[in-house]
Length: 67
Image (cartoon, rainbow, N blue to C red):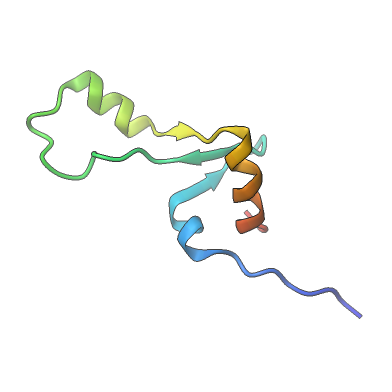
């Protein structure tokens, strides 16, 4: 008998991606509107996104079982 399938948490799937090495990437806030007043350095750091720390990524890997 096959085991149970785990559902992906859709809220987490829209916000996080798992890299090839298994780390979890996330986007950064404040990059959608009112962009004319933001400096280029700030926008560059916002568009690059970031990597979640190891404590959070353990939780996120449970929410994203098949990513």
